[in-house]
Structure formats: C-alpha cells, structure tokens
Amino acid sequence: MMKMKNDPSFKQMITLLSANFFGTFGSGMLSFAIGLYILHRTGSALGMGITLMVGPLVALFLTPVVGYIVDTRSHRGIMIAAQIGTSIGLLTFALTFMQWPQYYYQELIGLLIILTITDRFLSTALSASLVTLFPSQTLQRVNSLNQSVTSLAQLVSPIIGAVIYSFLSIATFALVEIIFELLTLACILRLTFDVVPASQPAEAAPTSLDPAAKQSLFTNFGDGLHYLKGNRLILLSCLFGAGINFLFAAVNVGLPYIQVTLLKMPNTLYGLTDSGFAVGMILGGISLSMMTLKHHPFLVSLWGIMTLAIILMFLGIPVQLGWSMTGNVLFYGLFNATIGIVLVMVNTPIQTMMQKLVPPAMQGRVFMLSGTVSSLLMPLGTLVFGALFDRLAAWLILLIAGAGTLVLVLTAMIYAQKTQLLIEYPA
Image 1 (cartoon, one colour):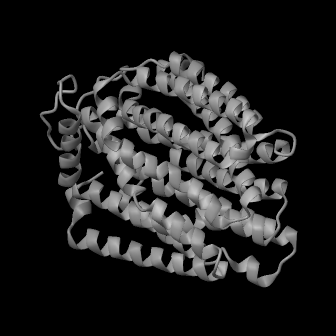
Image 2 (cartoon, rainbow, N blue to C red):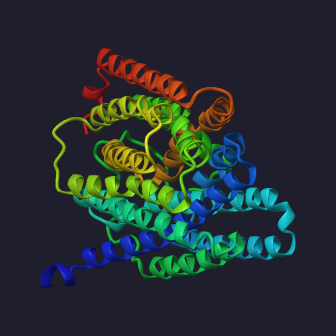
C-alpha cells in the first residue's frame, strides 16, 4: 500500500478523481436546482425540455472549433481557461439574476450556453489527455474509477441540493458552484501532463497528421471527418448513439415531469430517487474496474442498451396504479439505480475502446465529432417528448420509446454481424 501511495500514477489518479468529484458535485447541485426552479415556475415538461436542448445545439456549432483547438493547443491550458470561464459565467449570472429576476428564463438559458461551451472544451481536452496521463493498460481502470467518483458526486449532489433548495436562491447556488469550480482548477494545476509519450496506438489506422502542423480550422475539421468516415465501427457507434439519445430524451424529460408534476413528489424525495442513478453508477464503476471484458466492447454496450430499453418500457407504471408516495419513491429509486449500473456498462467500454483506437493527435476532433453526432438528435427528441408528455399518457410514451430502442439495438446487432465489424476492429 505504501508503494502504491508513492507511485506517481497513483497520485495522478487521485488528483484526477478529486478534480472530477469537485466539478461534478458543484455542477450537480446547480443543475438539480435549475431543473426544479424551471419546473416549478413553468409547470411544463416542454418548458424544461427547451433548457435541455441548449447543450446539444450549442455543442453542434462548437464541433469544428473545439476539436481544432484541443488538437493544436495545450490541453492543460485549455482546461485552466475553461474553469476560469465557467467561474466568470457563474458570477455574471448571479449578479444579473439579482438585478433582474423577472428575466430568469433568459438568464438561465444564457448561463447554460456558457456552461456548455466551457464544459465541451474541458471534457474534450481531458479525454484527449488520458492517454498521456496514464499507461494504456490502466485506462479501463481509470475510466471506471472516474465514473464511480462522478457517480458518488451525483449521489450526494441532488440530496444536498434538494435540502438547501428552499433556503438558497438560484443566484446563490451559482455562487456556491464557483467555489467547486476553483477547487477543480486547483486539482488540474497539480496534474502532470505527457507522463506517457503520445505514441500512436497499434490498433489505430495510420495517419500522416503532425499535431504541431499549422492547418486551417476547416482542414483540421475535414481530417477529423475523414477519419471518422473511414472507421466504420466508430461511425456506427456515433449514429447508433444518435438514435438512442433521441429515444432516451423520453427519460430526461419524462422522469422529472412524472415525479414532480404528476405524482406531486416533494423536492427532498425527488432528490432521493434521483440519487439512485449515482448509486447504480458507483456500483457499476467499481465492478467494471475489477473486470476484464471477455466480449467486444461494442457488443457489451448493445446488451446494456437492450436492458435499458426493457426498463424504459415500465417506468410509467406508478402513474397508472396510484401507489403511495413510499411506493413511488422505492420504485423510481430502484429503477434509477438499475439504470445507473447499466449505463456504466454501456459507456465505459466504448470510451476505453475509442481511446485505444484513435491516434492521440486526432482524439480532440474525433471525440468532439463523435459526441456531437451522438447527441445530434437529442434536441429534437427533447422537443418531441416534451410536447408529448404535455398531451399524452406518460406510460404510453415510455412504452413506445422503450420498444423503439429495442428495435434500434437489434438493427445494430444484425448490421454489425453481417458486416463483420467486430472482427475488423478487435478491441
């Protein structure tokens, strides 16, 4: 144990996990407060759904810029600038809200735009840095533990956020978030970059790209598109993810709408059920960090999404059966925990696979492109399901979304088998 504590990789991991915890905990409390605030002020699933569309839409326009900057600039500098930008944005929002509270909706949209921009730069730069922060053989362990720490923060943040929601204004939440952003910044400053040489993975397709080469933004972006188009497994993962994110917008919009608006669940109990996601993700992350996958990561993810589809089909049951509040809390807490476990099994293998397959010099563009393509239909799904939940029975919407997800999974499985993608891209 003493030897492990003196290991630079172990210290590096602790610093990274600490940064992730502080950032996720603070933003988790703020996001929870924003969601409750908008839902209580508007009482509409569509009103909340519009705010959920902001992130994917902004990310779409940012795609060429973020990938270009991450692949041509210092990752450390990008992350530091992102944290400073986030803090300035939060302070600006707090001061503006205190002065003109009647324009809360517009001010919250503006804040979400700023947070999306800084988060895209931070998350893309961090993902592209992992191959130089840690040896490749430890990437799955780092990703899994990172997911567990994220989940721990997500477990605590909605509970604490719900407790203090009645005592703090949304502007004060933003000021509290600044403290956590600065703690995250302090951890980033302690990270040592380029510990591992950024050599090209053996599994990756060859590329002539020199990361120091002076390219125009559009040439740089075009190289990323060309790489993505030439790697069918990664492209399929992105397109499949787009369809899944469209259908799972029903969960993002429907769960808070059902619990808060239809079932009249108090804030503290809603926070308790929401923390079920984090409990499941902690358990999933810890389990996955100790596992060695015996099947292809893409196949593991497909099985996980099939499980999520079945769960989704039953999420509207309490609305129809008229259970007690205790029954509703237990139901959604248990289901959220199950979803959390499965989400780790879905996301982490694919993330690790891409870190190994994609050359380090192209990871900024490819990660940003894949994330954007995957979330491309999320705004449309949010708009569609937000309108549907205001008009149709919740259980019917969730049943249809779950069935559609099952069809999409089976289609991806058949396509991957017929085209022998999993043989062509071993991982």
